Amino acid sequence: MPPKYAKVDAQKPDRATLGAAARLLRDGALVVFPTETVYGLGASATNDEAVARVFAVKERPRNNPLIVHVARIAQAQALAEGWSDDVDRLAHAFWPGPLTLVVPRSRRVSDLVTGGVDSVAIRIPAHPVARELLILAAIPIVAPSANRYQRVSPTTAQHVIDDLGDRVDLILDGGPTPLGIESTVVSLLADGPRVLRMGSISAEEIATVVPDVQWAPVRDDAPIVEPDVKRSPGQVRRHYAPRARIELVGQIQSMFIDGGETVGWLVRGAEPGEKRLGSTLVIVLPDDAARYAAALYAALHRFDAEGCTRVLVEKLPADPRWDAVRDRLMRASMPPE
Ligand code: AMP
Ligand code: MG
Image (tube, rainbow, N blue to C red; front, top):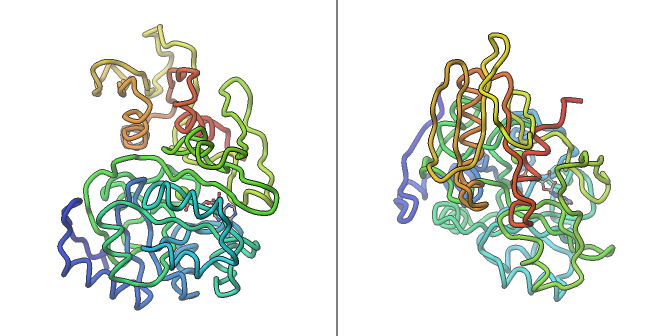
């Protein structure tokens, strides 16, 4: 049976539609909804059967913990064991928004959600559809990106339909997601504050609130090292990857493409858009980090849809504002294990 599908206004979503979606979530169903980052595959965090279905639908390993989404700080506190000043400052500075906080977990949180670790990742999203849905559901909701494991996250409802098809119960279509890359993840555990995943909120912005926060710079001239699994479960080297082989290149100059391979070019420019040059699909993205991030995954999905086997990506400016997209492209370019 195909999933139910409903269009919702991104700014003023229809309450009856969201009310029905919230009831489905409370009953253990899987509901896909837009957030300001990417589309999430939502399920009740308090229902182990529903959470198990999320892992099955995504084909995601069970040791890769899920982020729990809530509507209010009080709900977040109920999932945590203790609530430090740093956590409180970050929550007040950036929630609702694209920030996930990893904090000591309450015993109430299921082992299935946390992959068995002693912490839990929590976020209050800002997208009006996600917010309203979480308020109406009034329970914590796990919502990993609505795609199969290690694939490119969906930024439109169509991406979800293409990737997960009939595996979910309801898809709420609120149009393209505004930020386009996953949330910044900051860990606030006993070993000190640390950025585990770059996102739209930069490490420098986090440091304005928590000055001793640490992070590993993202470089495109050095391979991504195998992450410390205990500290950063689920942060695998290869991730966010399309089917095509991704290569970061200094500058794309030559028009010469050997063989019959369908090749993609991802470049930056003043006139974003897409054009075909023979068997080459050229996508021009904005030369601005935030706007590039917003459009990146749709471009990667396009290359897949066009059957590109190889995508040449013009290297990004060294400026730290590009770190989050640099991180995603570096991971997408890692060879499969
Ligand atoms: P997503 O796949 O976007 O839902 O993000 C989930 C990611 O958040 C995981 O793959 C981890 O990288 C991170 N995460 C979730 N829970 C934890 C945790 N308890 N400790 C550290 N990182 C976590
Ligand atoms: Mg994901």
